[in-house]
Amino acid sequence: MSINSAIVIGGGISGPVTATALHKAGIDVTVFEAYPGPAYGIGSNLALAPNGVAALEIVGAADAVRAAAVPISKSSMSVNGKRFDLPGLENVEPLRAIDRPVLHEILHDDAVAAGVRFEYDKRLVEVEEHAGGVTAIFADGSSATADVLIGADGIRSTVRTLVDPKAPGPTYLRMLGLGAYTECDIDLEPEQMVFAFGKRAYYLYWAMPDGRIAWGANLPSEQYYSLTEARSIPAEEWLRRLREAYAGEEPGERLARNTTAEELAVVGALHIMPSVPHWYRGRIVLTGDAIHAPSNTSGQGASLAIESGIELARCLRDIDDPARAFATYEALRRPRVEGVAARVARVNQTKAAGPIARKAMQFVMPMMLKRMDPEKMLGGEQRFRIDWEATVRPAKVDA
Image (cartoon, rainbow, N blue to C red):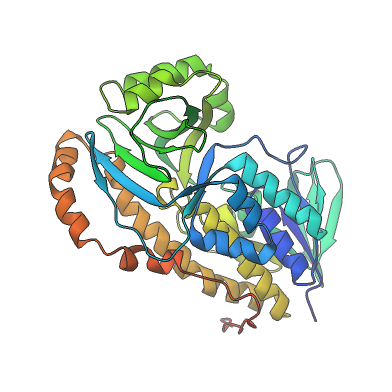
């Protein structure tokens, strides 16, 4: 028995990549997306790590991403306005900062060019497993059947609840995401990104090739705002809150003051995914943010989603039995993604550091940086490469 066909639910980042890799593996695949068209307008910007860009080489999208992204080869940390240069890895390509809608478009177009089919306005409501296959049933009454179904439907995954009704949902970080590209005279080297720990809120910023400054804010908020809820509030109100949060900060105050309502991108609540106990059930499996969504602080969220989709395709290519293919995929991916989540959980605690802790950070930072070993901290993450040509060895499946 071989796996010849697949349904992918979700057309964001992991869905198109997974589908393109499956097509490359010789598996017939269709992506079903709940939105009425490609979701180009969702989200702000993100960074792709060297390992994520390397994974995109496998599906043929890496060069388009490099052409559209801003390279980030240097990074600094700012605490109470005092900046410290961070050591980086040697002999790796830079991070690539890119608009999420632009990345969506590149990955969608790459998948279509490869021969992947997309169907829109298809909101999944139910899945039925049967002998030899699985059927997806959509809200409009239509259905589709294949050998396996892959949930690449993001942090609010419907498929995750079908795999395990008791599965944990995303954890709200009590921060809201906002961002902009704006005109602001800031002393920044080309390809430099600064992570700033302000008095009231964390933010980051970097230089664009056209002279503008890109910046992203993590605005503390006990009140939860979904994307829709956050975007229903006038941009002028968000700008008022940003200017209040970064008053007295350098350069946060200037960034907030210079940003216009037209420039502001509102993301809403920021989340992480806690560890998900069950990645698959029968002929249904999860990938991407549906099972692992580390904080944006990691710089690895999109890259890990891309890797997982490609590794899943390799497992389905080389292992005939879905249960064994899925178990092998989980064995390959779970230690890596949960290792990244553990690393960044420690960093996230500093985002909400109080004034005493920030003052302490400012004094201990020089000593910490001298002791920091970037190879030990980031080498395993960023130098990771998938060997597409290698045959996957099946993992043992518990009886």
